[in-house]
Image (cartoon, rainbow, N blue to C red; front, side, top):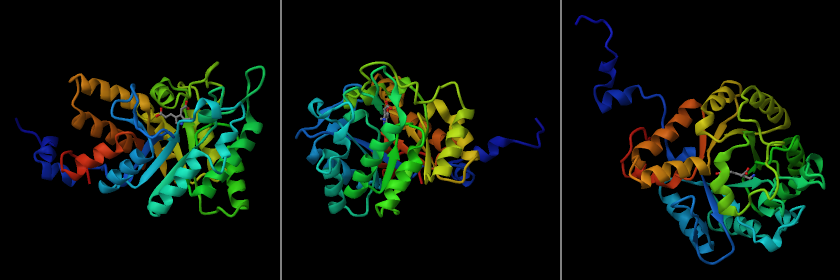
Length: 332
Ligand code: PBG
């Protein structure tokens, strides 16, 4: 058959495919989310096979293994015992709190790692909400922002390199930036959860931290999954308020939003492949219905292709290990 164009010629071998591959995965693209608790032993998280709530020894081991495969950035999520939870989440800014102690210890051991912290009240809130709940059930915005500023400052004082507000209160990026600057923490970055959707895909995370809302849902602060333009509104506010990096979350079901945000900002874009995305892939792979070494890199590559610079993923260590072993395509 005479044909001037045969696109298949550009796919004929791995070498030729690699000539014009547009997107790469590399360990430096990842931030590894880690769940920690104050118990000594690690505890399996049932809905996230392969992930655990780590005790201190377990955490140190996990960091060390991740560093060996090139993953140098971590975001820490503490599970707080029920007795320390209050309606205003005061434990969030206790200078001797769990996360504050862990940050100091990790920074002392590994000064060069990048530690990202989550700002939101849900792990510390007796209501399981990211903000303070009024008597009528409303989530109070400005009162919450005041507490989030204290939380962010206390994390910066303990050694956080990047502060990541995931609460979705209005005005929190600007308020936290001011608080940090006034206290001399100009060098601490803000990674804003810019377009964080009210998603069902956070279920396993809430199991991991036992942090599900006791009443109601998060729809008055997290975004409606039906909306993309609203992400641009949040993006422009975060840029004006001084965000250094912006995030879209979840990732896999919101690739269009990642792409939209990418096209509308010069800031680095992050995406969070959340607990439910991890659980879905893991469950299918454990059943033998999908092959982990194929679908995990593909799902991550799609997030990069959509425009994410950096990915928060529970697969960070695993996929970087495969890269080191030369087992996966499209690794750098
Ligand atoms: C807390 C927070 C959540 C996640 C990250 N930070 C849960 C929520 O908003 O309910 C979800 C991450 C995941 O599902 O992996 N504000």
